Image (cartoon, rainbow, N blue to C red):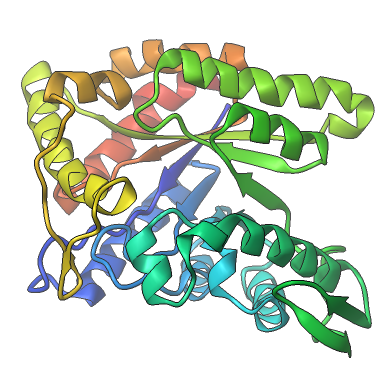
Length: 338
């Protein structure tokens, strides 16, 4: 099982500065590269201070310039927010500038506040995504593509430059529903998933749906991968773990606001709201524990067939502690799975 770090920009105070936030993320990526992590993941979000990254392809190029071996995964780019005729060319250029270390995670978006302020009704995101994905795949794999659909209509054109890799960089489909996981994996898509606040049973259903599709594809499914993302952090003792859990609970009071809540945002800053979930219930959904406990909690993922384990360690912890966590993961957790 390969290990990855999610570089999820958390910007709790404007006084900290966006330049410092992204320098912190770059420092994490450089350390992860030195310590043998397989990849880092960067997301796309606009207009909000949680998971703040309006230019994921640009940041991928920046990371590539400072690292040697890391794959850089967009997890995810929100296709309904882009014109595929422009975005396809940007992907090709980013793939060239990253020395073909780019992996393209794609999704439809989940934050109503963000999407609708950018002109995309939340009710249309699935249809818009489905068509955008078809257009993108066509533009990356064919020349002289024309289209006559609901959201795209254009005369024949060819994106330039042409992809270095046939069909462009590998794509990962971000999806949580087990039935959708099966559907997309059966079509030959790599899968990126997370149970979020779901139970262990949901995680098992997600992994089972992927394995079933992969098995049914037989030899054609041999190269398909399952990437699992979890919020996680390692610390040396239970007291430190509890303090980090409290920080995570405060983070989720903002995350829930835009993910499942009303989307109350004050000049770009997501307002923290009371949570229905208790802090002890949250502890069951995320991986904040000692290194030995982390090994025990990740072991079932190997049995489930997870190929890449992504740990989101950016939820308000200081940069010094975050770098210590990356070091600890490399020394005390990763060797147990390689």
